Length: 327
Image (cartoon, rainbow, N blue to C red):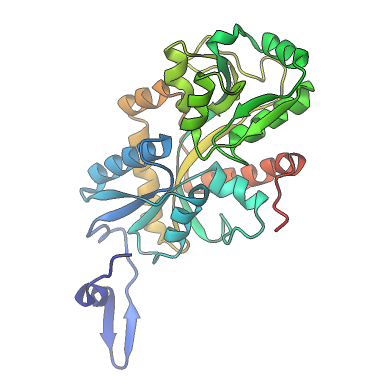
């Protein structure tokens, strides 16, 4: 991390005899300098796009630069831990998602942080459902066709997700358990390579976010069979939900903004307010929908409750899939 010059380091303190007393940041004086926002995944992906979108919205709202710094690796936990270890002064935020706040805490007992205790979860951004897709050349058009193909196959159908223990991985495994089809996970480090191999005919199907898959579906390379949203998406009206087809699978890969524990509440509330207001703008909504992303306004308390519910909801699915680390 870049060293802060001594004169700036002293600026946050009041000098009294024999003591240096830290001055808490308040919403009235914050932000007085640029604010860091950490993107936890590769440049160019959905997480990066959303981090930059929120940074632009907050830069405009607060008339101060919110700049993006990419700290990818270890499923995004490198970036998350970087911000956890930062001072709670309102100048360090991180893009978090369902993996950081619900999946990894359930699958990795040695993760090193608690998503509710060690982070201040500030605002919900958007979520993208998982879509089961196949190469258009397969001739598989519907979920019924897909299940029939899987049951005819003398070996498990291979599939890609965005990684081991990801939402896509869990949705595919749950679907397999509900239908009795045999599948084999081929883990990739991200969505891009898995989708490239699917388009090239090297694996049987994909369990990726709609946002990652949208361009290939629109281009006719892939067929979207069904997705895991609660209801059909406005920009993909012909793609059914798994739930309407009779499979109780509802899930999204959602994204949020977090900071270190102990962030002043007045700053947290102001950021949450501007996120909700900015994301509700028609041009932002249109941009999100184009990539199959669905936003939902949440207060800080509602977000906390939502994360707690996601932690509880995904726990049995992770255990059934045998993804709890034994290390």
